Image 1 (cartoon, rainbow, N blue to C red):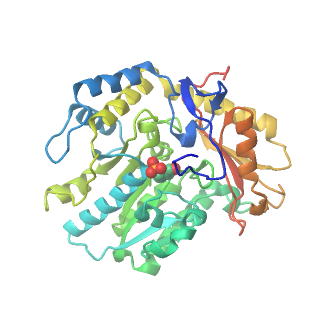
Image 2: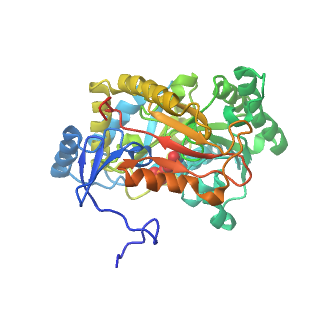
Amino acid sequence: MTRILHRSTRQSYPIAVGGDGPYIIAQDGQRYLDASGGAAVSCLGHSRRDVIEAVQAQLDRLPYAHTAFFSNQPSEELAEHLTSRAPEGLEHVYFVSGGSEANETALKLARQAAVERGESQRTQIVARHQSYHGNTLGALGASGNPGRRALYGPLLADNVHFIDPCYAYRYQEAGESDLDYALRAADQLETKLQELGPETVLAFIAEPVVGATLGAVPAVEGYLKRIREICDRHGVTLILDEVMSGMGRTGTLYACRQDGVAPDLLTCAKGLGAGYQPVGAVLMSNAIYDAIANGSGAFQHGFTYIGHPTACAGALAVQRAIERDDLLANVIGQGDKLRADLTAHFGKHPHVGDIRGRGLFVGMELVADRATKAPFDPAEKLHARIKSAAFARGLVCYPNGGTADGTRGDHVLLAPPYILEDSH
Ligand code: PLP
């Protein structure tokens, strides 16, 4: 009997013992093509010697030193690497151990900076339906994922308000131009701010490309620019959650580059350490950093493992490998190819409603009826059946369920490693 509380107590899991590029090898010898990088994590595959050696070298030098006393070389170098490539004004960074911690931290940074600026009345947060920002209570409270919230609703903050995501497949009207739709969707934020009193709103948080909840749904061109304008007009902090979409997944190191927008806070994780180390980061604007630096001088927050030297050494090696091997060009080329192949195979399938995404971040939405876009009955658990049928054939993909109210269908998310080749 296992001692671990696994994700499901009704299922047994093969023991993973080895990695070979995009493949994971189980104890029984079965090879699995990791076409979703787990949950969009393993962007370099599973056997990069350069990253493994960098982690080993750091362990040899110094595994860990607490940040209450020391800084360390890998975190200083990683900070330089990330901020020197970041959208304008994001010149400071805070390292954590994953995506949920990154978003918790971003919300707290927004709050402390507002208080230090004398705006302590800013307490409300606006987020979007069908979003996911993490499973810790603060991040979950800001997540519009009904399934993940349901059990914990009574424990979640009541200062979070939701608008619709920018989700063209379901919400763009017939005959409406992309730009008209993008602006209409973004203007929901303006309406919500007016409802709440804009001076009471601290932050707006969104994923530039919605990952787990919707399956690689990119914002329509013009949406994030309008969101940026609205936030600027009302002094609301814009947090972009690039935990899944960042670090090259969409073809640019930061996904929001493609939208021509720089947030005040940008969170990343997953592809940052590519699974070689658990690590996340929050990039922050000079204004946020300065509010704290010129105010109290200390961020009222902290975890034991912030700025972990070995985690940062692993992430630095990952980021250098992405650049050295020009992998983002491959992300764009293979991403285009993957979407074209999926369209050729499934584009006319009666139950494939939409094929979408950017770079190697690809989603396929499944519907009971293409004409009406009616989702399958969630009781059919289509996504779970796809996941296990694919796994039985040696394919790791990341399907997710639709909702009973029809606001989204089941989907399959693909996020293969950036080293993807035709032969895979
Ligand atoms: N934000 C987004 C967009 C995510 O997709 C996830 C995880 O799937 C998280 C945050 C939470 O990250 P973690 O699981 O590393 O805490």
